[in-house]
Image (tube, rainbow, N blue to C red; front, side, top):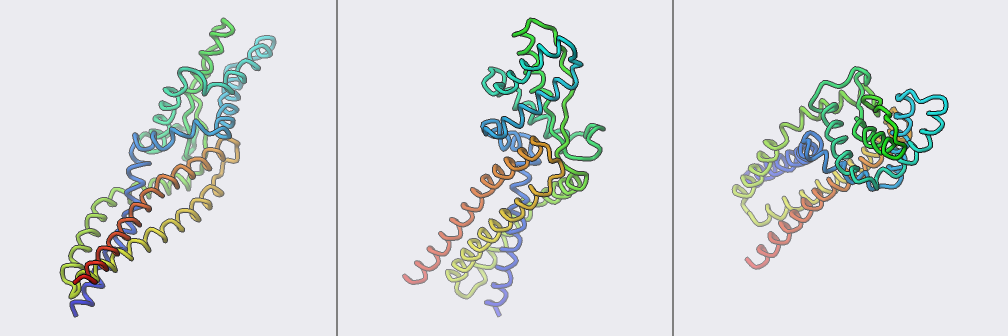
Length: 273
């Protein structure tokens, strides 16, 4: 009877852990502003993403600044040139960080702008300010920044999903604590504690493998579901998917290693006993 109860509690522990892990990662890397900024920061180093970003910023400046006639013909190539090379500008890192902060706020913490119409969005206003300032320095003009540049990159349904996952992720840490506590109880009441430890370790390995498969396949599907087919929207979805996969992958590796250590300790100690 003790063995059966221990087994059931161990299974509950693994289920709680499996549910808590992605939620905790989401809370630390998406809901958290600093976590999101850190996750999205390296996107500025990707050549394809930089190209899509430059095109979007340049088009936004030209379309909203009211450039026409001779002024437009003179300024347009300079705007594109500056946008194409803006990652080399001294203020790029600060502007990109601020853009990620603003993007996080309109999607997670603040009321989204009305022009998004309930969709996910990206605030590129700091990038516009950087490009406009550099163009003015080069041409000696007084070109005004065209206000906020917020690009829609998703659908209302995807924003609703984000809100639901955010609410669920707030319970992830307590759920993980419960999972760990259940694992301890499972080992303590087992007839063969070392064997129970080894089985729990194997379960952790299985959890890591299963979640890796789900994240890879589910992430590919999510990228394909991004409604905005603009170059920037698609590039952003693909690069964020890759960054999230790499980040969560390190968590799963740590879980797998912990599971492997539990298996080794349990089996070796069992043999020596």
